[in-house]
Length: 234
Image (cartoon, rainbow, N blue to C red; front, side, top):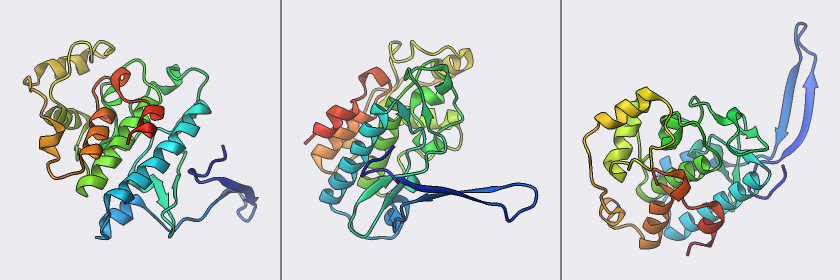
């Protein structure tokens, strides 16, 4: 992989300074900070900053997905910035290369930092693919907008409850791919909630940002906006 919006690998070297094992060093581009530190710095960010960051993030994801790679851990700490506001996606430790986006190799719920896990991951659905990165990127957009994580879940079940609070209850069609009976039982046990318009939940935020956010955060991955369409969003 080599792209302007990912932390590119410069070199791989090793050291035999330890007797019992070798240490492998991955040399990557040096960046100044990350989105997490920026958000916690108190620095004022304009809508234009958000647009520039999201454009670069989605551009990097488009390249990654075109190479049949799913990042699987998009979060503010893994999105690096330099002093010119250039953005690079890093930390590919949980990424997987698959010939088929719905490969069994991706069927594992113990991925993606919890606050940024897509519903299909939380529900241990049989199939999921690159759209989980789009959900995580949507969580990052929401965090840029309100300066705090959208879903501070303490567990997978708590995460699902928080998502219901924001998006409303999923439909039967949204849950049709659930194969885990415990997950389905939990979802059926939750009180039915109607969706609240994002314009109300994010009152005072830029309307275009709200519109894109609503398209990135959907229960059903098949209805979630693809990276290509997100890049074209105004």
